[in-house]
Image (cartoon, rainbow, N blue to C red; front, side, top):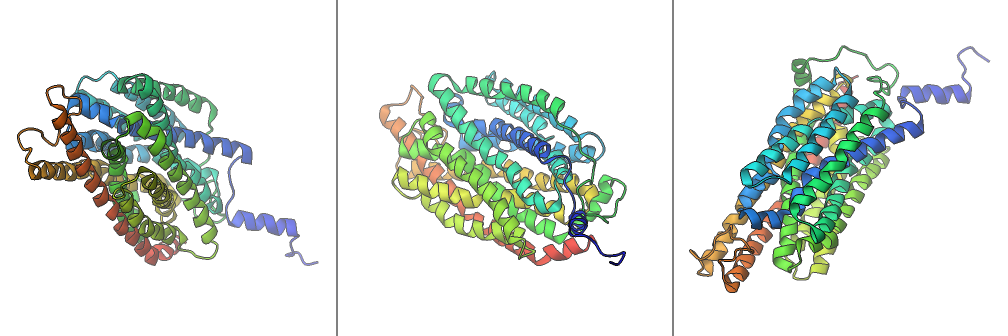
Amino acid sequence: MSETAQSPQNFQSAASEAMGRSFGSFGYRSFVLMSLTVVYTFNFIDRILISVVSVPIINEFELSQFQFGLLSGIGFALFYTLLGIPIANLSERVSRKLIIGICVILWSLATVLCGFTTGFVTLLLARMLVGVGEAGCTPPANSMISDYYAPRARPTALGIYAMGVTAGGVLAQVFGGVILDYFTWREAFIFVGAPGILIGIIFLLAVKEPPRGYSDPEGTVKVERASFRDALKEIVSKRTFWIMSAGATIAAFSGYALTGLQPQHVVFTHGYTPAQTALMFMAPVGLAGTLGAFLGGFLTEKASRRSATAATWVPGFAFLICAPLYASAFLVPGSTLMLILLMVASVLQYFYLGAQYNIAQAVVSVRVRATSVAILLFIVNLIGYGVGPPALGIVADLTSSGWINANGLTGQITASCSLTDSSLSQELIAACRDARAYGVKWACVTATGLFLFAGLFFLTSGRTFVRDIQALK
């Protein structure tokens, strides 16, 4: 036998090294992945809860849809976005688990403070503090996952992590809905925020920091950690990154607006209470979205064995299909058919969650992965999360005002009327509900149409995806 011949075992080992290796035992890295997913889940529970209790807050503080959009949008997203990049750049140099653990504790405390606010301004300030804490979650978490898992396993791992988005939405609906049956929206913030403090402490004690670049394929060039200027220079050169980011931003613009508007549509149009809406409608829709986040990652991994651009076309086609389904859900008269359409559309909508992170990291070198994700999140959150809810809130306010004018009620009620206003007659309260319902419905339909553009951008990013990856070699 020649000296260059290899046994099947040695060949298998060499092939594994060439494709990269995962860090730690299967059991431990699964524990770390689950821990990060739990953290991400609470991240979204705390940010989404305000949408679950939207109607009681709107009624108590007599808010317009635009004002509520500020609370659920830019009020949270401003500091969340602005701090994301410097925190991500810091995570290229210091312990990522330390950043995550401290930030979990901070945003949980801020969520508790939301329950003690006295009006629009104080609630807005508390929401800003939640954004400060949550800025330190996703960039370092994605970087850790990339070091724990070899490239071939990352799509599924990132898909599981991305399930925290929809799982957090489901649990926010369940916890918020149950609490609203017995307490007020203030207790909802306190009871939901407090457990996160304990989770942050446990995370700090139980999770290990992996070696950077450990799971990259053998032969991957090891370079010094990049400065922010160098990282930005590399990312600017990646056309795929920017095209995909446009699609992800449009998806977030619509998705985050719908998160706040959908519960109101059920309450105002179909007559359910906020608690019933959370448990009977939004929780099932959130579960469907959770399935979509996992299914998107799973299908992308399977399709990637035959198509190098699967990460771009799987979510792209999903968006094109979900848009008309979503729009139909807000136009049908029956609540049962509405729920079915919302669930199917939600599965397809969330196919992109893992893909956006996978693409953002795949087209750059190991030294700038966290910064790449942070820049993606900067764009997605500042424009999508920050502007989406208030922009579509304006659409809702304008269409509500149009309904009020068309029905000769100008001067009697406004687009910011409250269903609990004791100074209004029963007829005017009913008119207020109808005006709110009309505005929210058409804002939702407008939002769903934008998913068509998100799909087109993801499909277009596939034209340069392979070329940008090959440029790293």
